[in-house]
Length: 292
Image 1 (tube, rainbow, N blue to C red):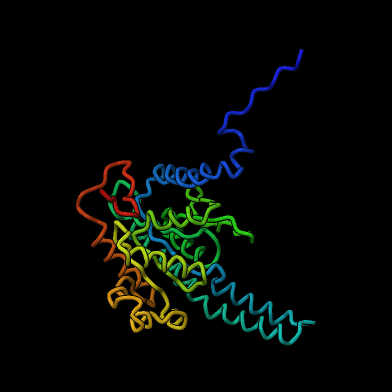
Image 2: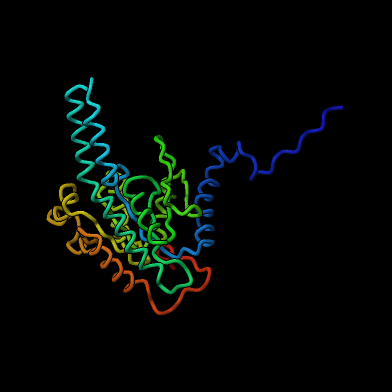
């Protein structure tokens, strides 16, 4: 008599299948449905997203880093020491953006938690990691609000910063699903100095607005004219005829947390704080307009 076969696992408990190429669609759907369920449970209606470099530090940490470089120059080649000192000094110069992001997130959250609404409005959201992300989550935390971190698995480890609200700490595998959640709930976008990823997010939102693919008004703040004027010549797009002059009206360049807060507060109030309250459990509109 042959041995009795063991029961096979049901498909949704079959880890080999779920982690295989054939299970990819289920993994994608999970990165849509699980965050959606959590946002509903936490009563998140919409967000203001902060983007910027993960490499910036607060001023005190930047000063400590410069001191460490200066004190550990023994046996360091001169060229390497010069480069390290240059980067450490740049870290101090850029630390003001960390402090400004923290201040802006604080002001925005202090205002938003006082809005009379059934659901949480304009919740500060970041990529959940260090740098500008940490600064914005910290500012929102200090103001007594919930704050969201949409982290992602990377070849180099990016741990969530300690200021993300634990119930709103997310980890994604797929970049496109993470980017979807950044855009899906956003009513405001604040772009601090950053690198490739920051520019990617900025131009994606500007392209969606330019091509009329947003069902809502997203206020875009580009923070730090000194930095961005060196990185991007927006007027050159217009001069070359690659964008229309009115396309530059999709964003505002700002240099102080107070001015950025006033711009966001006034715009969010005008475009998104209408007189009619939303129904309980209602999810925000689709990012793409509904077509007949």
